[in-house]
Length: 111
Image (tube, rainbow, N blue to C red; front, side, top):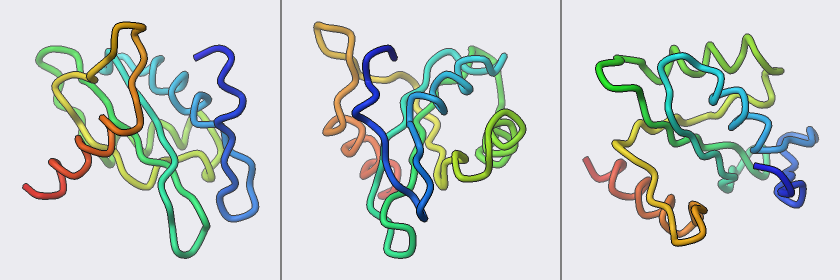
């Protein structure tokens, strides 16, 4: 997550760094991986969408994850959407690309 300060978004006049949310999600006992991206929002300009991978056997809901982030960070940093995925696709450099996350979101929405 280091070196990504260029990822700052403005959501409803608040400066938000997706990596802050990723770090908070990384401290959640039932999550093993997370990626957070900005998506367009008609009311706030941009908002956050989180993709999380749960620990084997863990049953965590979107509401529980949002509540957890809300206890760790300010309300403006709580993702509007949380999508639970079996794994985050990573490239050769170990990075998750926005295009792969957009594809995961589209697949999730079509269910």
